[in-house]
Length: 100
Image 1 (cartoon, rainbow, N blue to C red):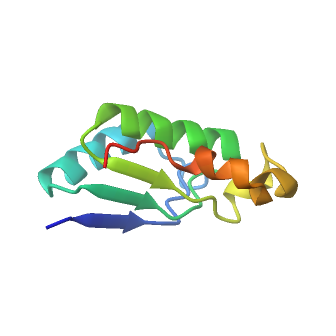
Image 2 (cartoon, one colour; image 1 turned 180 degrees about the horizontal axis):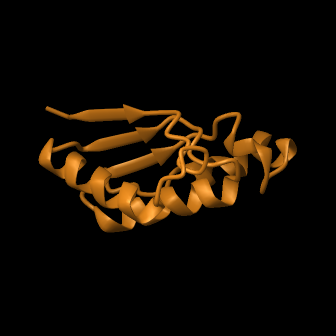
Image 3 (spheres, rainbow, N blue to C red; image 1 turned 45 degrees about the vertical axis):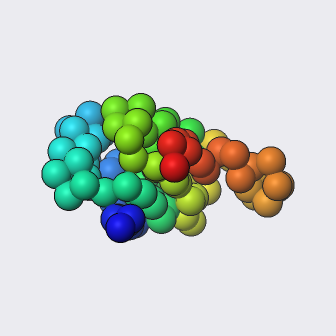
C-alpha cells in the first residue's frame, strides 16, 4: 500500500517559522507515518526560489520518500515568471525527488 501525505499553505515566512525546524519536524513526521509520497501543494514562501529550495532540502533528507512540489499563488509572487511556470520544462522544477 502506498501512503500519501499532502500539505498546503504552510506560509513558513508569513508565520515566522524557522525553515530548518520545519524541515526537521516534517521529516520526522513523514518517516514516522511511513509516507511514500509527499505532495506540497503550494504556498511555502512568497518566493519561488525559497519554496523550491525548501522542497529540495526536504527531499534530500529522506530519499525514500517521493517529494513533489506544486507552486501556489504565494510561491509565484517572486523568483519565477508566469511564462516560466507555464512551460512544459517547468514541470521538472516541481519534481524534487523521484525515487518511486
